[in-house]
Image: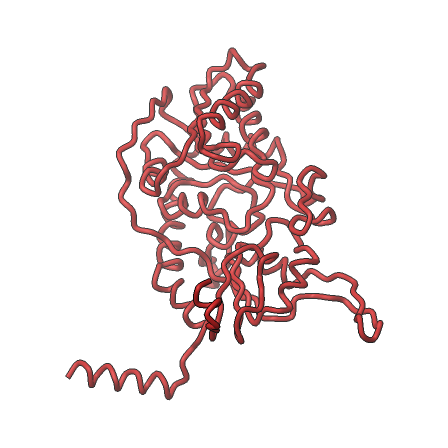
Amino acid sequence: MQFINNGGTFDISMQVTIPNEWEPLAPVNIGVTAGIESTKISPKWVEKSLIMDKIIVVSNHAKFGFDNTEYPATNNQTGEEFQAKTTCPVEVIGYPVKDLEAADIKLDLKHDFNFLTVGTWIIRKNLENTIKWFVEEFFDQEVGLVVKTSLAKNSVRDRIVTELRLKELLKDYTDRKCQIYLLHGELSETEMTALYQHEKIKSIVSLSHGEGFGLPLFEAAYNSLPVVSPEWGGQCDFLCMPTKTKSGKFKIRPMFSTVSCDIKPIQEQAYWAGVLEKDSHWCYPIEWNYKKTLRDVKKNYGKHKSNAKKLQKWVLKEFEESIQYQKICDLVYKPTQEETEWNETLSQIQMV
C-alpha cells in the first residue's frame, strides 16, 4: 500500500482470492481461485473474469464452472442482448504433494478399524449424513469414525457447541457398539499426516456435496489412505488415474471407493449471493450405496489398500512440487527459445 500511495505501479498482478475481489491492478492480471463447488459460477464471477487476462483454478471441476456458465446480458451502449461468459483462458494447476514427517499424536481409539472424516460442519460438507449413516451401518460392530471438525473456529466455545451438536445427532443411538470420536481444534500439517498414517485409521470418507479440490482427500491419497467419496467434484483429478487395459490402451478409472450420487439443485439454505447461485447443482450421495461401500471397504480392506498404494505412487509423481510450481511459472511467463538459450549461456559464463 505504501508503494501504491507513493505512485508505484505494477507490471503484473496475481490475485489469490475469491473472484468477487479481483481488480485490474496492472497491465496483466491473473486471478487465482479454488473455484466453485457447484456446477456454475455467479454472474459477479463472470463479470470479474472479463477484467482478468488469465485465470488459474485448482481442478477441472472448477474450470468447468468458468467455461460453461452463461448469463443473459445487455450492452449498455447499443442495447444489444448477448450471453455473457468467461472469455479469458482458464488453466488448471493443482496443489503439490508435501513430504512431511508424522507428528507424535496420541489417540485413544477403542477399536482397531476406524474411518476418518475431515471438514468444517457446514451444509456443503454433509457431515450429518456422513455420521448418521455410518452409525446405522456399523451400529452393532466394533468400528470407529474419527470426526475432525469445527463449526467455524478453533475456540473453546466452538468446541462446546460442536460437541452438543454431535451429541444431539447421536442421541437415538445410545446403545451402539461403534464409536464416534470428535477431534476439534487446529492441527499442524505433521499432525494431520499422523492421522492419515495412524495404524488404526484405515480409510477417509467424504460425502461432501461438492469440492473445488478436496485437500484432505488429496493429502490422504498421497499418504496411501483408501478414500471413500462420490466420483464428482474436484477430487476426481487426483483420485482417478490412467490404468492399462487388456488391450494395452490406457483408461482413466477411479482408484478409490466410489459412492453413487444424484446431481440436483443446491439446498435453499446453501445459497450464497454472489457465490453459490440458486440454480446451480451439486451432488447428493445415496444412502444405501454409501453404507454398502463402507461395508465393502471393511470386508475387503486388502484390495482397497492395494489400490490406495497404486494411487499414491501416481499422485506423488503427477503432483510433485517442482512440476506444479513450474506450471505456474510457465503460465505467468514462458521464455522464448531465444531467451532460454541466452539464460543457459549466462549460467555457463557465471559457472566459469
